[in-house]
Image (cartoon, rainbow, N blue to C red; front, side, top):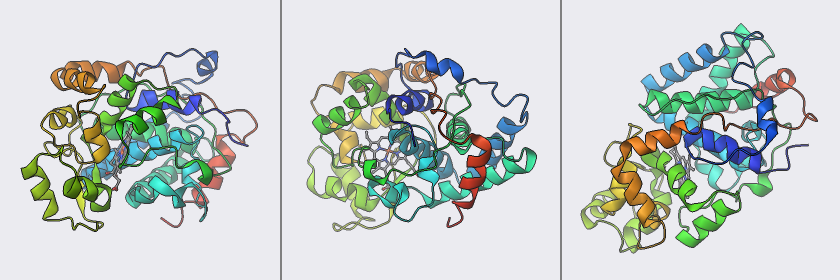
Length: 323
Ligand code: HEM
């Protein structure tokens, strides 16, 4: 059985991109940044060098790793259930269909490298959490301490993959989706800043560039050149200004109506989150501080009814083979 509480994933999420979410639970104390210090002292350096080398080859991978971790956490906790290669599992559903397959390949490769230095020790959920952090750092973003010791899920939860909101969402729908995870509007705006890196397929923003009026007309026209009205798999950067840098350009873009997704621009569209976007756009340092405040707010350990990392690691290793 998997964790039944979404709160654990959200707390971990907050460390990843993020947000000041009060850490009330004592359970977090069971995770530790030194979890592998004795059992696998080279775990973190192995993950870091795997991420760095993948990002050097293709900067987008840093973004893809961050999104993988987010999508894993949003469904019943940061338990690597997203990695389970079940044809009717989480990977086959809703927003997960647009996850960059390259991200899975990189995770699988890093997993193999970690296994070669410490067989059966490090959980996939921890690898994903550390890789997401290292991906952000490799693109110039802030670092944070990742607490470790998560256990991996043995089950996938396709029924809950609709939890991450679609890019067509209104502000009301976005606020509601985050509220269900106990995240407030400021948290939501902070987390959305992850769209300062990475790319989206035309089919994720075609409605916005053809039908919306709250978009910079030159920006929309330039996107239409590569994105047909009916949509396609052509890619465009989520942050049109600095696509491969983890900075606050995502927010400044919103001020000039250059959000790529409808849901991005909803955060600055004469609504209740406008002032937060303005504030983040004007305070680069503020954003960095918010990210750093994620320290110590990492994922909760999963309940002890799962196999510990060793078994899970082997299990999951075999389940990424299709990528
Ligand atoms: C507010 C709700 C959100 C919506 C509606 C949303 C939606 C999307 C969509 C549609 C894409 C592009 C998918 C594609 O077409 O290939 C995307 C990409 C991405 N998202 Fe989000 N997202 C949200 C929040 C987040 C959060 C909270 C994070 C991380 C903390 C995140 C991280 C990313 C990253 C890094 C990418 C680029 C991935 C890549 O290039 O491989 N997103 N998101």
